[in-house]
Length: 356
Image (cartoon, helix red, strand yellow):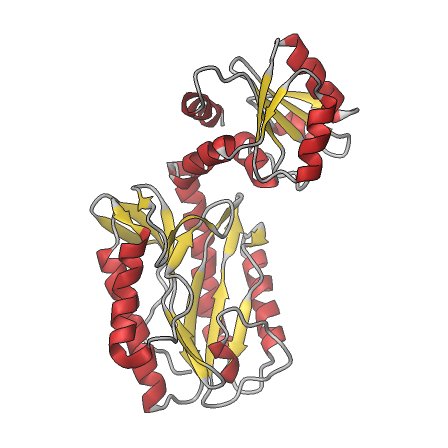
């Protein structure tokens, strides 16, 4: 964790004096402490402080190694005292902090210039985008649980199963096999609902002839993974197979093409050209993918509008889809590790059409 603080200091302006970290994800990134919405991190060139309330103080004292842990009384007053002790006149805040919180900080720190521009958040985002070996290892462990869950569901899915029951089964499986949490709300939809990219599991029961789309992921040691598979139940029509084969062709082509040094929109175009060329223009509305890490959706993106360069060490999703409103849809998604010479698909789940 200390290395992350040092990298932040190197990325900030030479006259950097202090930064206030108040968002959940960045508290976790710099301290490795998953305390929900509690705690204030103050980073100075010479030292880091963690102000935390009595609910978590014992855990923090036992687990936080690279910051001085301070029992919270009145957090912003304590921040003011620390800034005074270190003669700080300029404080950076994350631009994701609420306006109300930023105003409270300014009121509590007379004589300190509070910078709420994107400078701090952009610097942290750039650091978080490239994963360390430890971060990648956590994502690999999360993906192993996700793969195991998919294999389990192949035996579970059958006509008559309710979507909400299946989604719960997936979540219980992942939690029961080592996931600290699920990475996001599990999507399990069937039949015509598979045309909804972010459909919500409901009372509908799986029918013979349905496509079933599962979009899910485990979270392990604070890091997420993301996978989507579409399977057929009982049988698949020629049209369903044609749509599936088109999405699979696009997904495989993107996995083969993606590597470091590309603009996000260049990889997206590979999928879009295949899908549109097969006659499905207008039926692939979302971007091809996104970065994954502590949050399930991070930057950069694989999308038509993203000119950001994808760098080696980033973890991205590749998830093309075709959605025919009111009829059915297909999405196939993998989480991949970007290298200089290509990308590594982190999971092992099969992608060919499975008919259960």
